[in-house]
Amino acid sequence: MIKYHLITYGCQMNKSDSERIVSVLEKSGLKPTTQDRADILILNLCSVRQSAIDRVWGILRKTKNQTVILTGCVLPADKQKFQNKVDLILDIKDLPRWPEKFKIKNSIPDRIGDEIKNFPEVHPDYFSINPDHSSKFEAYVPIMTGCNNFCAYCAVPYTRGREVSRPVEDIIQEVHTLIIQGYKLIILLGQNVNSYKSKISNFSLFERSLAEGQFLISNKISNFKFQISKNTSVNFPTLLKLISRIPGDYWLSFLTSHPKDLSDELINCFKECEHLIPYLHLPLQSGSNKILKAMNRNYTATDYVKLIKQVKQIKPMVAVSTDIIVGFPSETKKEFEATAKLMKKIKFDMAYLAQYSPRPGTAAAKLKDNVLATEKARRRSA
Image 1 (cartoon, helix red, strand yellow):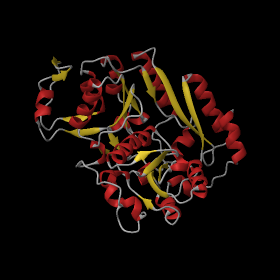
Image 2: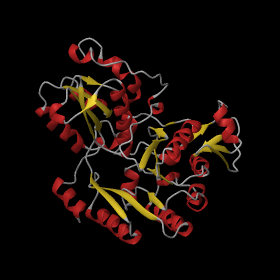
Image 3: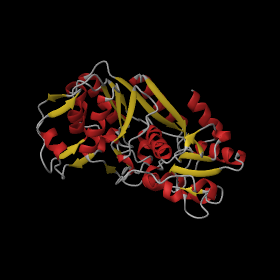
């Protein structure tokens, strides 16, 4: 029996992808095990920070007689570096066809390829694969992939491509199933989740039942009022309203938002959607307008503060978390202090601080990385 071990780096989207990877592997006859006993070692990579890449090199130096497969958010420059160090580099979008690729001559040893079964299900894309959720309480539901923002420091547009939104009916069907299965927290995922937009074009039986406001919950038809028709354009606030009208005992949340797409309509969802929990993760990245402009974030510190005030007017008890990058090229001590001052003013419930590290191919990689590593570390711990 072929055994595998999966290591996941990075964000919740990668964790969600790994749940689908596990589903495909185990339906193809593979069994999980510890890293040292695995025939196949799969690394679901994150190229957002150099630290994750460095950890992969550390793992590769220790592997012996194992087939190593790389997937996830991998920059072209990193793919080139790893090409001769791993057995296969596979695109997560090709996940339904992974078992077939395992069998390609010379990709992995024959003894492994011969034992792997072809994935027994047909899927148009990897999002339609039923994931093997790692939790019985909460479930990630990816609603889109990719990003169109091209923040100067970010690798995502180069690793996951441009934004692609899942069909609204697929998302609602997945959420509906999770609620029936008893999941209590549904987390909608996207690199820029609030830019979601999709049209309903194939008016299936499921969509017609949705349009009529009917859901089968615990073998009973539950009704709600919400009109939707063919060719309806569904944005993220509309998707939240649709999902929140599914009856059941559950909470709804979402990650990650971009301030420029935090619309009045979306903010009002905190009041209108009864299942939506009072929590917002909204990356600030910097409190300096000069640095925000250099990052290509398309908002100012004042814009951000106004958004937080608006959210708290609608939902006073909302918890707000954020992301901050310290040591971005040309960030002076004064500009860092502007970030620290703004953080104190907003009083975030949680803040995730990261030291800037240049990623090949991004706009910021062309800038001089002129903040010393020791100073970055000091600012991160300040």
